[in-house]
Length: 331
Image 1: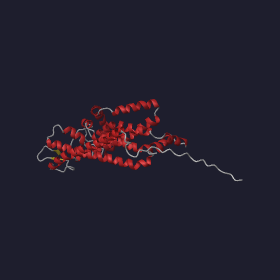
Image 2: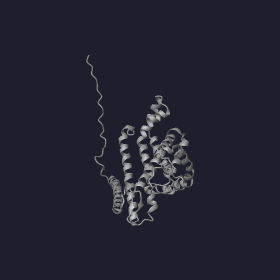
Image 3: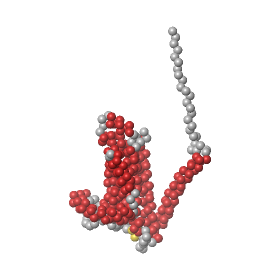
Image 4: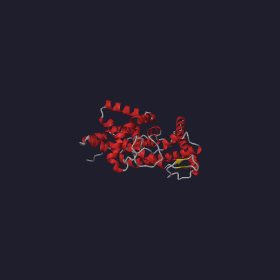
């Protein structure tokens, strides 16, 4: 006996509405598209205007410089002939920022993990509020606190580092005195960028899919293994972005550095010796008393800081783009 099988045919799919272009043609969409596009163009125009201004004024200063702008250790734009260079400022900016990042990033990631995965809800809320509050403190307040509290108390730390780690050259203190040196600047910058890195990292860690963590726990993973296998890989790109935000503030910090540092134009890698300088601190300290050529020279140093910041952000974007596919952030 022949049997017949009835095959159920699926109902026809309703075509989804997919706009063919960036705008549906409605007035509101066109206005919104114009505003967003104008905002993007305005940003590019502002960046181009800043770059053009800095380049023009820097070219005037460098054309009159009798030294090598990149390798000269002196900053004497008002003498005849004018001689100035950014070697000391570039080294000081990089060293202080590296110290700040080495100290701040691991501590910030630890605080963010504690708030997002270990602390009770009430304590986590309080800590998150305090961290956000610290990010809003003006830099001059950090500078005053650093000059009155941090500098006197770091004298003992300097002596300890010189005694036990002076053989490393970096911690060899050849000029004993008040701790107005690059190490103090780096520690202060680390304290200043700590809230920024912590806040962004905490928000990234809170976005980890709950199913990933529960699956790891169901397989018998410990809390640390869950963080190592699920949370940190997912949040790696976000932590890098947070670190770059902190690095940007460290590179351009002005008043706090000028308050705690005893500047000089002597090139030295002894972190415990007073002296050195940064781009932002030098511009803030010299701009009012500078003649027209001196101001152009300061603007030229600002151009180098501008380019350095762009390179750092570009490198961060490149790292994030190469690691994003492995982090699980797109899952």
